[in-house]
Image (cartoon, rainbow, N blue to C red; front, side, top):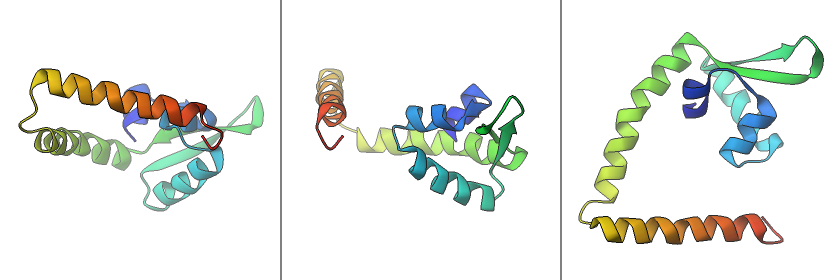
Length: 106
């Protein structure tokens, strides 16, 4: 929802890539979000195999309300970390993500 809030309409496959999940997992996630009327999939007229994903008005409202909560949780989890410690943690986590992307199972 964050990506849709900040980027507007995205192709479903592009949204899956940004979220770093598989297209089938994105389909399942969008199924749940559509049931809650938070997003909508729209067929692209030039290629019916492609779907664009957009937030509904309700979805935009929910997504905007989540941003302060995410910031609050991040601040609580990182409480007490110095700036160098935070940078080090971030670098380590980026290495984990890079390893996951290059591993045979990733």
